[in-house]
Length: 174
Image (cartoon, rainbow, N blue to C red; front, top):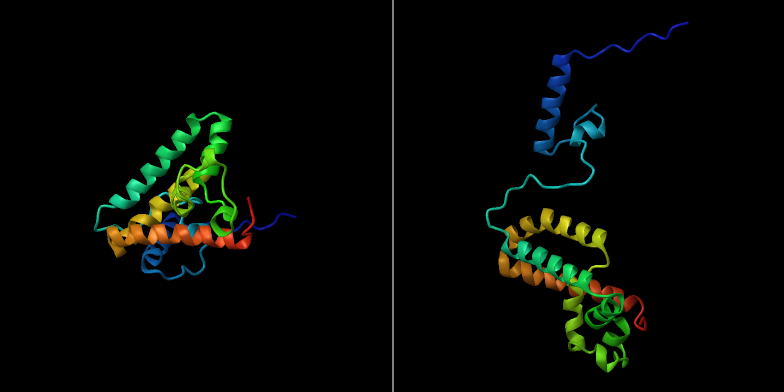
């Protein structure tokens, strides 16, 4: 017993559905009857967005370059120096919120500066690339909407808020 074959869509009908799906994507409506992958494209990891920016994203590009340079510097360090750099420049909750202090040889910066310096440290290639990918995709639009100075202030404020959330979760974490 043979199962009946599914009727094939004509090429014209398939092309028309693709055009309609693209129109719906652009207008923000949901494409009814189309599989989700066909509705929004097959990409899993976004590499760009469709929102052009009026301003050149100087702050976004500078932040990406700074993070990349700091990471490349981290890679040049031997394991002991790398641990020392992370301890000295990273945000240590116990140092920020309690009377704990780093050893004298690890006190490279004032403790209030570590939430800012920690924003530029990354634990590996995937950490760096993931953060920079999303900064590249979304940062230019946010910078465009806010302006350069406000975006930089917003970026730094969000970084400090992230450090505060982590530190408050366990204030005695070394």
